[in-house]
Image 1 (cartoon, one colour):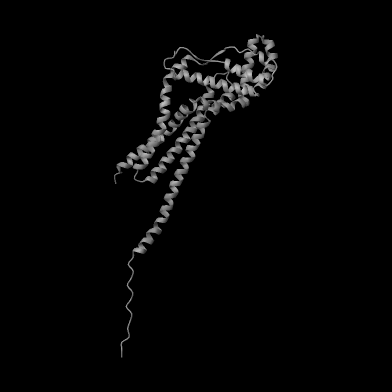
Image 2 (cartoon, helix red, strand yellow; image 1 turned 45 degrees about the horizontal axis):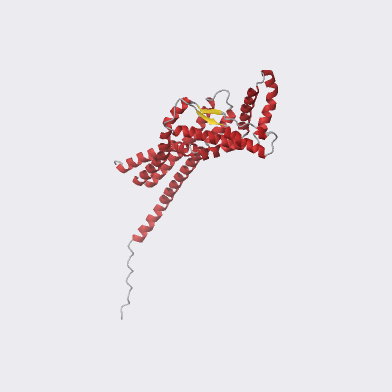
Length: 310
């Protein structure tokens, strides 16, 4: 028996929908999660209390302070533990958390403006002025009555946050990412709905779509784990791996949750479709017997015998 044309078209649409799941979720996450300054700052805010991140910040700031002080190598080895402890204590204050959020917000705004400015120069790196962050820290320390906090100089210090060679490449792909972040998930939903509507056996189509979605969620979770390993392996030697891993986990937390939701919901829907099919088949023979019994002809009553009159 030749397959029905609708079945073939339905299978193709469902397969396309399942293939788009591992790609649609990351593009939507990047377009509406990473590209939104508020969501980015919210995702990065808990890292201000992460021990690995605070150690990395203390090491970076401590080394910078000693370079500015012009200490020699023997003196640097002696003074470094005290500077590190002082900076480490600062990372536990509210002023540091405010500076962390303000620095992430300023960095994200600068990168977004550079990516969306099509007329900008591609040979200039993206820079951030740390003067507003310094002013915020100074104001908070003064409010906390820290000695000599009012004398902290607020200098316009420019820091490069994105090299020029990376900016040109990202500027070309960013508009494509914004378009794909909307249309890939929409296309996945439309293909799935159309494939189920065209299917001859819709229960099977729903189960296939659910299993394909669960498989896409599992592949997405696997890709995040592999991506984390590759990202940490490709970092320079002077970048602390625990702090970089904490940043990766914070940025991909939403996407990781989405992958597990896709896996759980897909398996739940597939199981529900299988159970309804099982219940239907188990009730089928009983319904057939009842219908046959009700459709059987009722025998006519036997005529009553009458006594012959004498």
